Every structure is written in structure tokens, then in C-alpha cells.
Amino acid sequence: MEQRLALPERVLMQIEKPARYIGNEVNMVRKNLSEVDVRIAMCFPDVYEIGMSYLGIQILYDMFNRREDVYCERVYSPWPDLDAIMRKEHIPLFSLETQTAISEFDWLAITIQYEMCYTNILQVIDLAGIPLLAKDRTKEHPIVIGGGPCTVNPEPMADFFDIFYIGEGETSYDALLDLYKQYKHSDMSREDFLRRASSIPGIYVPSMYEVSYQEDGTIEKVVPKYEDVPAKVKRQVVVDFENVSYPMKPVVPYIRATQDRVCLEIMRGCIRGCRFCQAGMIYRPTRQKNVEMLKKYARTMLDNTGYEEISLSSLSSSDYENLDVLLNYLITLRDTDHVNVSLPSLRIDAFSLDVMSKVQDIKKSSLTFASEAGTQRLRDVINKGITDENLLEGSRQAFLGGWDKVKLYFMLGLPTETDEDLYGIADLAERISEVYFDNVPKEKRNGRVMINASASYFVPKPFTPFQWAPMILPDEFTRRARYVKDSFRAQRNQKSLKFSYHDAGISILEGVLARGDRRLGAAILDVYEQGGIFDAWTEYFDMQRYENAFANHHVDIEFYTARKRPDDEVFPWEHLDVGVSRGFLLQEWHKAQEGKTTGNCRMQCSGCGSATYGGGVCFEAKN
Image 1 (cartoon, rainbow, N blue to C red):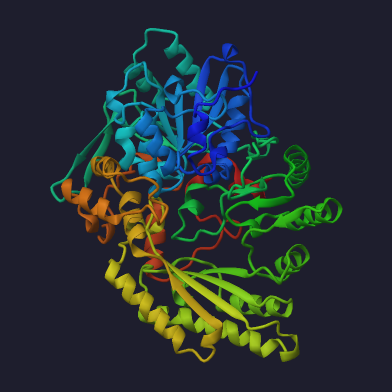
Image 2: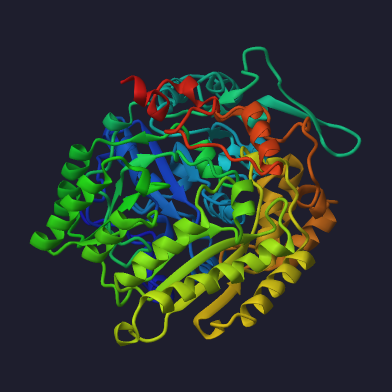
């Protein structure tokens, strides 16, 4: 039976890329509504092309729809052109699969991938016709649940969510959905349901906790309101990573998505322990998938999607122990099935370069070094684990292999950074260019070597050793960025060097939202009511809206960004447990200030705390 579209044809004709809203894509799940008991609207609060590229949504969509009693559908943020029409014509937000109003669903499940999507979350809830504040909802409204990376500090958005799922979705959702079915078919109140849900591992119900503050504005404590609500919510982790569900038939969009290819998740977590990296801390312990299983996945997913490209997903693919076996298999697919292989950022060594030379057109590609800091001293502070020698030798091998473009990524404002470290960025770029001229004969040079360096504004994140660190002020960031730019101009090979840096405004705001508390909720709502949506998109971001809202609600930006935290400060996320202990993070913070490094997880256990999960790299040597 043909599905009736929620948007009339005249509206579809007025908007950009109407295919974002019509559903019916290849591999879309179809179910008989009369046979399901629980309906979930799975939302990525950004434009369709971005949301369709997010692996986490595909995994949960597949997992939920394996349950016969559940139908999971998708919804994304309407682009501003459709947003305006929906408000003007009172068209409710709808799902792609059945084009049903979101208000008719049991759950609205929102992935919170990055801080700059907070106003889009309010857009989705509002357009769905659901009260923005969780306290105003009744049993007639869907349960609004949030998951994803930003739930390690969900406090700025606590007023708008009924529940946050802390951790990896493959573990506790069955118990939560079974409890919901009891609630739905009984006289249990919404409050009773939420209170009982809070006892399920990984389920954080913000309304069940009270926050008190000290006179200086810092948090005194976060405590549960009832004895049966846990004092700490422990992040959920999939220990049996090899046998967890994975989407063999991912939905294939009609229009080009950001990641328009088969995505193979080869590993979760990272063994490296970079002190600035939140993902490297919160996704511990590192867990790998069996290489034979991955080969089967690759073949099946290519057959089920028609894609002609495959990419690997992990935080540090070079640390996957069977990478050589897997890549050699993928190369055979390229040769026999004409499948392109998209490589992630690899550690630059002889093996990686050999593989890249086989699978990439070197005339079109550039190598990427995430060096992060310009001197060895500062790389030791951040525990980056690569040396100047690694970078220079990797560059030499790459240039001899035919590459002539290198990208370098840095951060400005890292703890203990000095002008000497800043100059080191330009000096490193210059030395890499010299490696090219010293090793590649003139007759073999294909145009000019280009070393493109870019710098972002360092933002300290929760559950990292740098959560105690201050951000530098915007004027100081600009000074440092200009100092680096001037240093590039002073290099002998300046024509082969290029330096660029990111806008400070969004990074400052990211710092406020990343480490903020519940007092930010009113300001975020204010920004939304001023018209703020798609703040992650430069053309729609307006810092003035935030400055107005912060002034209206007495939010001191520098309180959240520029202040160094004392060792014993209670953080807004103190009642959450991600596995990595506060003691370990504090120890790493002190080691950073002393310039001492910590070995990776395969070299030696550093006692971070994630061994309590009982699996992954923590136990590899014992198996």
C-alpha cells in the first residue's frame, strides 16, 4: 500500500532536497502497526545527510527493530526552509517510515552527538508538539530520552529530557522497554515509571536528583531524592563486542549523505590515553571485533546496499591488531569487485604507507598527521605518544612513496603551552618540507610540496585529565594564532607552508556547554526562543543570541571556561560513573603538569578503573 506523505506536494516543491523527508529508502524497515506495542522515533538532531551518516543511529535502528513488539522509525531536524513552513502551517514533525506525527509515538529517542546541537533538540521537541520542559509532560506525551557522547555531562539539558541513557545502547534498552510496556498498560504514573526506570543500570533520570550550590557558584553536591534511586549512574559498556548486533542491511539514502559508504566498526575504545581526548577515556576498555567476522560483514553489507566504497570505523584503526589481514582482504575486494577502500587516519609507518599506496590515488590524497602540539615537551604533556622522529620519518617515507601533500592538526591553548611551543608548530612544518626537498630529486617532484597546518581552540572536556584545566581567553587565542601565522611567514620554505585557524566563538560556547550545569538550561531555551537552530552551521550560528541569553540569566562565561578547577571541586557530572576513575584522571592531570607520560594500555595497565567492566584490552593478556 502506498504511504501517504506528511508534507503536501506544494510544500515539497518549495523546499531544498525534499528527499530528506519522504522516507521509503532502500532497506527501510516496514512493520504492521497493529502488531507492535512500542513505537520509537529515533532522532539525530541535525540535517538528514548528517544524521544518516551516523553509525550509532543505524546500530540502534537495527537493534530495536529486531524486537517484534517494537517499531523504530527515524526523524531528523527539518532544515530552516521547512522549519519555517511547518511553524506557519502548523504541520507537526513526523517520522520518515510511516509519516506519523511524533506526538503519537511512545518514545522520542534523541542522539546528543555534540554540544552545538542543543537548540536543534529543542526544535525537534517543539515541532513534535511535546512540552519543552520535562516537568510539564503527562502520560499522554512520549518519553523523551537522550543518548550519545554528550550524556557524559547532560546537565545543561536536564530540564528538557525525561531520561538519559548513559553508555552503549546495546545493554539496557530491553529492560527499559519491558518496564515501559508495564507502564503503558497500567495505571502507573509517569513519575512512578521514571522512578522505577532509574534503578535500571545506565538509566539516569535527572528529575530524581537534586543539585545544591555553594556561595562561590560551584556545586556542593548532587544527590538522589529517594533511597531507591542510585547515588551514581554507571555507564553501560558492551563487553561481548564480537556478538553484539550490527546492521547488515543499513538504510541507504536517496540523496548523497556525508558518509556514503559501508561502515565497518572494527574496534571501540583507544589504548593511547591522550589526555585531551574525551572519546579515548569514555569508550574504555578497548574492544576488537574478530577479523573473519569483519570480512563476512563487509561482503554482506556491500551486497545489501549496492555501495561501492567501504570505510573502517574506530578511534585509532592502526591499533587494531589484525589490520593487515583485514586491509589485504579489502584490497582483494577492490581488485575483484571494484570496491573503493576509504582509510581512516592511520599511524604513519611503513605498513600503513604501503597499504595506502595500494588503495588510494596518491595524486588526489594527502596524508594527515594529528600532531596536536608543535614541540615534544607539549606532546608529552598531552600524552600524545608520537615523537618528532616519528613525524619526520613518516613524512620521508610518504614523500618517497609519491605523496606531496601533508595535513597537520594542532590545538592552541593546551595546558602549559608557551610561545616556544607555538613557534614549534611552524618549525615542525618547515622541517617536514625540508624532508621533502632533501629526499625527493627534482625530476621526481610533482609540483610543489604543500604542508597545510590548521589549529583549533582547545576545549577541556568532562572525564578527561584536563577537566580541571582552564581555557584561554578569546583574545589570547587570537594572539597565539597570529603568532603562529607570523612564524609561518618567517620560514625559508614559506611558499610550501599554509596555516589556518578556527573561529573562537563556537569553541568558547562549546566550552561553556561541555562543562556546564543545570543553570544553563534557561539560557539555552532563551536562545532557541530567539530563533537559534543549526548552531553547528556557521551560516546560522549567532553568538549574539547566546551573549544576550547569558546576560538575561546571569551566566558568567568565564566561570565555566577560564577558571582553573581545584583538585577537590565537585563537577556537574560527579554523579555519573564512566568507568575511568576520578583518582586516575587526577593523577594524569598532575603528571601532565610535570610533563610525564603514561604508556598505552597494551604496554602496561595504568589502573584507570575500566577493568571493572570485565573485558576488552584489560584482559587480553590473560586469554
